[in-house]
Image 1 (cartoon, helix red, strand yellow):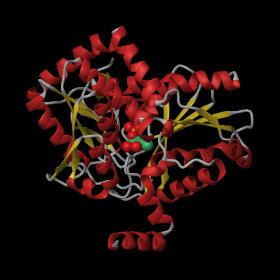
Image 2 (cartoon, protein in one colour):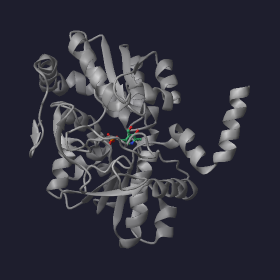
Image 3 (cartoon, helix red, strand yellow):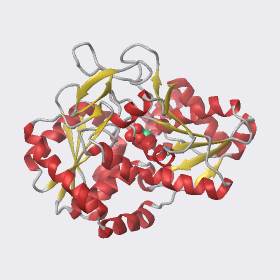
Length: 402
Ligand SMILES: Cc1ncc(COP(=O)(O)O)c(C=O)c1O
């Protein structure tokens, strides 16, 4: 467990939050290492989440691109449709082992909220999710799902009424209620020890992929590609390959242009150093440290900060950063659907776009693994509008009248 990754990370919080974080630190040192916890978590990953997820050879794409052999790690087949459940389930189980009766979470696009709500229902804990009021409007299907799992969703009316305001509201609530509540954070960021906790719960992706590729190909991949919001799916798969000669590529959201507010590129010169939401890293911010709006076609990548470990790995060159813009993402989404029969989440389609660019330049004996972090059913209100605008709008109007 690391408090800092080079200069990044840390625990920059007010005194009022320190007791709750210290209690969590202690639980990480004891409960997370206990055989009872490990056995129960593994059991649930297998029988509830559906792990191991398959590593699928994308034969058609590999053939038509004419370069590297492409493999897809299918996190979209995990319970609730994305990798988010690995971490949500782990932290909710930790809460139960800590004797808490309730979990709270922040959510932006709603994927993490849905995963926490499902895990809490499975483990019998109460769940409350803080979500910016603007996001509540934009992400009605996920709000609906969270409610089906029995969670209470609190629309946050402060600030810009988006993710950062939801984080602030959840932290404030945690300070007041930490005796019986655990805050379940959704990506590999935030104050120590969250970046470590989230990475450890997500490293199952990389551990499985490593074992699977060795079994299928008898050797390690040359390149591993993952999309990058806060960084949890990227770190999850990369962690198993840090000590190997494997190229690691993280793909950020290039959005609709290079102007501030049009993308979510924190690395590659987009962001600057700051301390926000309890940790030091790169953020998209103005000269006064105010977090700036972002844009991406995928709701899960439009976050203004990046997890501290990835910021450090980017600095030292162990992880290379690239980006895909909204149009490249939509193109990749369609190509993967038509050639491989797989509907990627729009977040994962950023990694898909990078694979389409890179694989043809590689040799046929080389191997590239892409983390398909989620499936794209959740995005139908975005993709259908982008790809079939008129028919989709007519359908929605018809539904509204019925
Ligand atoms: C399917 C999917 N992939 C990726 C992400 C980005 O998060 P992270 O960078 O933490 O993996 C999200 C976030 O909601 C997501 O839903």
